[in-house]
Image 1 (cartoon, rainbow over the protein chains, first blue to last red):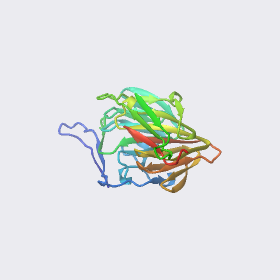
Image 2 (image 1 turned 180 degrees about the horizontal axis):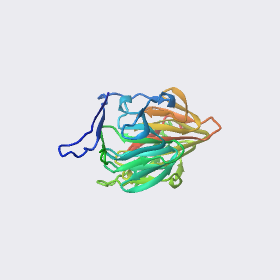
Image 3 (image 1 turned 90 degrees about the horizontal axis):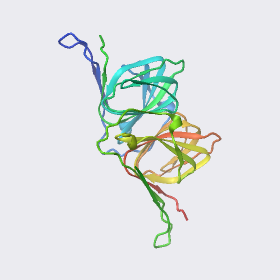
Image 4 (image 1 turned 135 degrees about the vertical axis):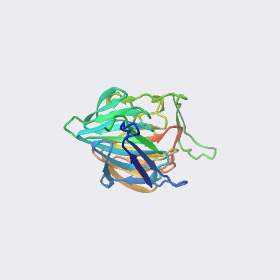
Length: 155
Length: 155
């Protein structure tokens, strides 16, 4: 069961509140994982609401009985941008395709296929695909709740 | 610090003992992970002793401060074969290249780029690349000790 909620708006001072999503995956206690081979064609992709031109597909997660971590695949269209944000959990990523920019804690990195990244929990990061080719990457996160918090005002 | 050890031989009955490796990565306690961008060209590959024509490169692991899991990349030459074995920890894998066979608990699967696999801890599995193209995959495992135990006799 996935639980997703989001809030956005202005606080009592009229300032734009940061936008926050909470994503939780409930893993059935004591569930014994069984082997899984999931084909590329079986993956459902959904738009990433925090980013333009970005999609996310879950390859394996707690709902499959994976006990510790989830593997997802992201796609970044040419022109895609995900603004500065933080997560409550770390990312381990592997770049599959394209040449795009990842900003982490004030540094920018042009990445391409075969590069891997560790983005610690709480690190401010962003993505931008200024190339002509679609970008794609694997992103692995520990199971459990994540808070995705945008850094920039939504005003 | 990585610790590797292996034993092989015969037990008191003269039967061939299974071959076992123990692989441990010590994570410095309290180490605060810092962002990491590791280029494909920086990865060192080493032959996998349990398999023929197979290599492993560590992309990110506990030595980088990754708190929960490690990401590795494996290469399977045409003709490569890793015999039936078990691991003490689960694998989450993503197929990058080639078309090769994965056996899991008696079932065989022909996999190709974009497919993902969950191989539970303790599940007997093997690999064989009967194709003409090199195979490659990402394999993510939880931090901590692993025991790699071959199922087949080494006699």
